[in-house]
Length: 182
Image (cartoon, rainbow, N blue to C red; front, side):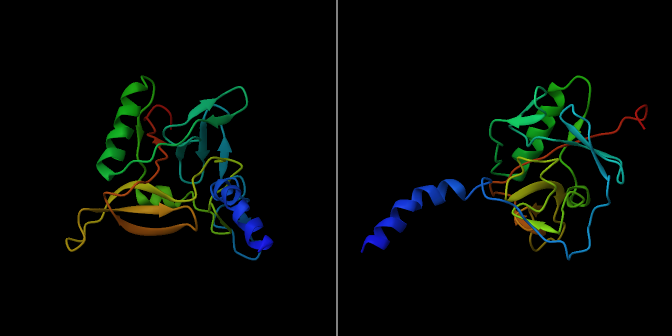
């Protein structure tokens, strides 16, 4: 009886640790999906993917970048519908007078996946607040039988799936390269 009581008393702690507080699992016997030095932390709230010529937001949409310690503060916003995620990306971009930000397409978002790690399947040194769960892409599912669905990447394990456009998912933005930057 005492064992049951002890286990039950640990349930609130287990619930707290079920999010990103648990350690990421990585293996060394999987061929890396990302090249060494593929990503560069620009120390300004962005991460450059030099292989794919992309600039990522270090923080999830809803978090705030803290330059003092190169970290993300706050909680990511989960968007219930794909259209809400697209609109949020546009609003974020409209509020930035210097750059244009967009929701990445499925190929761009998939480039972040590190298949040698799970929970989350991403380089946590560069993207430390990545949610162990799905992220919206800008890519709609064009299969008429399943529309209006969109493609997502679930960073729990890096899987790419089609999902109903009315589910709660996170967002990470990419910055559009202007011609004078490239």
